[in-house]
Image (tube, rainbow, N blue to C red; front, top):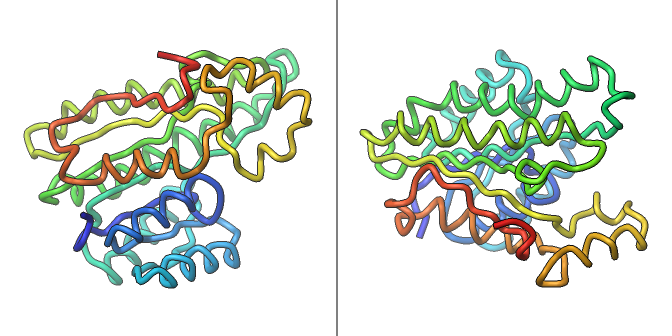
Length: 246
């Protein structure tokens, strides 16, 4: 399905990003596992892809640093050539009530979650335009659709991805390349394990399907958006949240 395609997944040493990277590798893509500091975890992700017969490399790069992203893209080009699919997944949270949030708390989240998307997309925009299967896929969140207490900075970045995606879908349309957005709900990752059980249950009570998403639920959608089967879909936000938001 993705044979011959080079896919960069930012922030893919663990969690949703790793699940996406493994799914794309499983379906024939040459995968770039990006990480900022978790070299060992990125190596494990590469090993997992290769164990299933896929091809992958790990490339360090801080998405919030434009020069670092340029260097990362140079290394990817040396290894694989043109990038066909960019999955902007890297993101952070610094959760506080707005009245307690500092300017640094705000700007740090903006720099990674929105600035990182700009940096990676800008450096690879020519690749995506030139590819005969160019795909820009941005990972947002149900929090960008609904808001969430204590996450003014995070929610702002994730809702900002909707406008970014729709605008670039228009700018890419003449090339045949597409831009889409995935907005997951609450996903069962190691971060969720740190949430107290009573809070987890309150969240589940808000989900019509009565469960958290598995990483595979998100990865399968991204794999579809990366494929030729999605070629007539662009500028869309796919809500993958168990029915929390329509």
